[in-house]
Length: 191
Ligand SMILES: [Zn+2]
Image: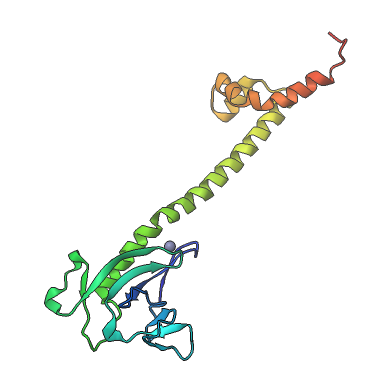
């Protein structure tokens, strides 16, 4: 049960940390699977490229994301009295499943949310910019058509809600190629 971003580009979870620093591949499996074969542990029967590390050897937790992001490490302490969320220390009994406690997992989830906040915000920005550019192109085309039909810059400015001068400054240059073409099409000797 990982966490997903809106664009599905990021899937995060609170991974368990093995003694050699490897991170567990998933938060949902019953056995804690670690990518790679160290020789120290039993490979998994179903997934032979993964070591199964016993729960009591887990040293801590870290946020992990499918994009490669990793959060800072949380230490697993051996006594409940040493647990301290402010100092990234969490307690899980030695004979318990070594998944992070709810509090530690929530904290790691928040770290992951901060990690995806910029791409999530940029996602909306890209969509808005696409719409803005599309509308801008349509507006410029409509202005060109109005100009070609004989509308003045004052007419166009009034329709758009800006001054004659602003309309001219904004679009006159963009209409220049059309004007040049008209100029070139004029007979060279026709003054
Ligand atoms: Zn990510």
